[in-house]
Amino acid sequence: MSGLSDIGVKVEGDSEPEDGPTTRIGNALPILHEIETYLTRLTQGGEPATIDLRAMPLAPGDYETLQRLLGEGEVSATIDALGPTRVRETAVRGVWWVTHHGATDEVVAEFIEITRIPTILQTVDEDLVDGLLRLRDCLAQEGQAASD
Amino acid sequence: MAKDDDKEQTLGEVLRQQGVSRRGFLKFCATTASLMALPPSMVPAIAKALDKAPRPSVIYLSFQECTGCAESLTRSHSPTLESLMFNAISLDYQETLQAAAGTAAEAALHDAMKKFHGKYLLLVDGSIPVKDDGVYSTIAGKTNLQIMKEAAEGAAAVVAVGTCSAFGGIPKANPNPTGAVSVGDLMKSGQIATKPLINVSGCPPIPVVITGVLAHYLTFGEVPALDVHGRPKVFFGETIHDRCYRRPFYDQGKFAKTFDDEGARSGWCLYELGCKGPTTYNACATTKWNGGVSFPVESGHGCLGCSEPDFWDKGSFYAPLSTGHWGTAEGIAAAAAAGAAIGIGAAAMSRRHQDTISKEE
Picture 1 (cartoon, rainbow over the protein chains, first blue to last red):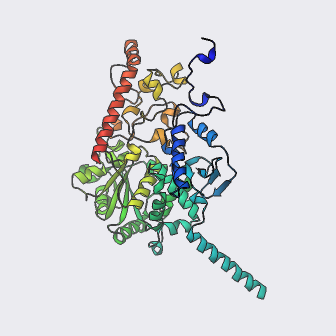
Picture 2 (picture 1 turned 90 degrees about the vertical axis):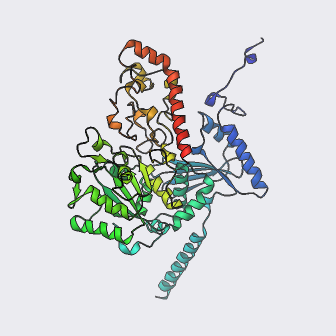
Picture 3 (picture 1 turned 180 degrees about the horizontal axis):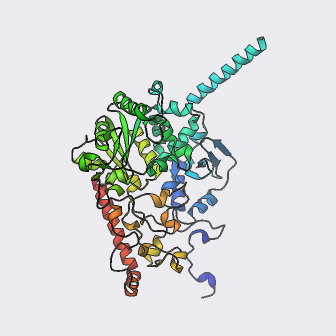
């Protein structure tokens, strides 16, 4: 035995070093593999996918490990609908972290979406129509005001 | 109370009128799906179904009860999400919430029952007294049983809200002076029409369980999968003990012996202080209360088992579940030593229950 490094140590949960390459227990790694599968599918023209983080039994430290390994990307957005929803792209492009908050800012649901852009950010067809009607209404009123 | 002319509206239209955007609606659907343990891939389908679902007529009847169930529902902490469903429905009769009183209120009830015959959802809280021709609880000169019989006739489905209507609850506790029975009992004995019945037990039940059940019914047009006691499995599939954050202490045989000892301060298992967690099926340990703040065990008191039938008559709330380990030093030492074994036993017991309910499928 030459030193401490020869002694087998099992690192558990959030006590692992900050820059550790992987986590050895819990579900962080399996979730990352699942994301890898979905991302591969997406690059091959397949469907987007969503992972419900609330449905996963996460061991202590799993959540932090996932956040650390996926990192921070360059896009973030807040949607103000029934309390804030925070959407951000991770450093892994195409992997989005979506957190729904309630009226008092508590987390009500949390998802990882593997997609080009999360559904909740997109404008749906019905809203496009509503928007168009609103703009036409606005133009009509302005025209009315100008002619008065 | 809703006006008559908006009855043909869809749920989506009603919500948009209330200022809920389409993104907000999608968020509500995603949250509901997550809560009901449905896969996220189903969210678009749920959103589509709910958006087009006709605004349902709901009649909410209160019998032998304390109004705690209605309080639980209407005072939920995240009103925008949890009561969204409640705002979207057409609540045609609810004694505590309606503006109308006296004959006008009774007329509203009968109008709704006639107009939506065969379509309305009937929510019932409170048990129904049947002794001495049901004289112990009457509304507008009619006994609870008479009202229940009329209302059940035209209901599409019945939701028994709270332990009283699901199992009889406190009014049914020994010696049950009023002859109180549950809604299910009345169906079994043929005193009222048999309709699809969902028991949402708890004293009171968790508000989000009620809205979750309504969302499920409106989305799929059928009642969710139920356990042996008629409760939705997604919320009542596991015991408090199974999901309790203090469970590791139980498995290690670390128990609080009094409410102020070192064990209690260290957050050890409350089994010896009478916690009914191992035999109680409910979602308190995961959904928690007051906007997710805590639940009874987290606040330092054992579970009373309020979502189980006859919880009031199962001995002291402060006596441990299995007898013989209480009060003597010898017994407590034995309990501590047997901690792990009991843990395995309880786990096996709940697995058995799981097996039973999955066989029901």
